[in-house]
Structure formats: structure tokens, C-alpha cells
Image (cartoon, rainbow, N blue to C red; front, side, top):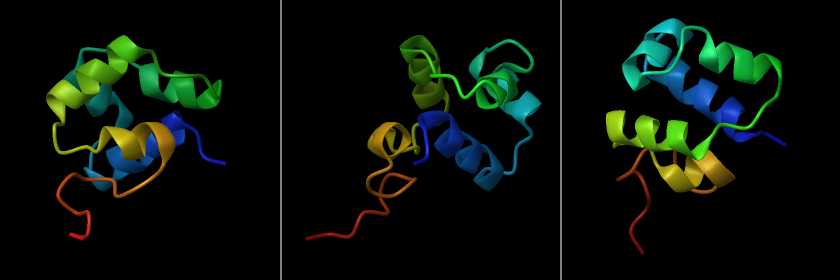
Length: 78
């Protein structure tokens, strides 16, 4: 099962960013996302807040649970 860090790496790849570019964009230390991935670690809520502030198109439900679409607005209308 994918963890939040795995989905975050999918988003970074989708956005065409390097992990370093992404870390800088959210104000994280250089190497943060790769370190989290390597250690299979959890992402802190403060970091998730920074991610969502910087990338408001990212669907927080998908990021945390894997449910729904990666990006907001891609959900099918009922």
C-alpha cells in the first residue's frame, strides 16, 4: 500500500519538479522529501500545510488517503 510520501513523490514527478526544487518551493530543508522516502517516514502536518499552501490544486484527501483524484477539480460530477 502506498504511503503519503509515495503519493507526494508521484505529484512531484507529475509537476515536473526535482525533489530539490519541490523542497525549496515549500520551504523544507534540502533533501527533505528524498529522506522521508528513503526512511519510509511520515510527513508532518506542518509540511502538509506548506505543500497545500504552495500547491492548492493538490487534493489533500488523495495525498493523505489515496482516495479520489490527485488534483482538485478532476473529480467526476455526480
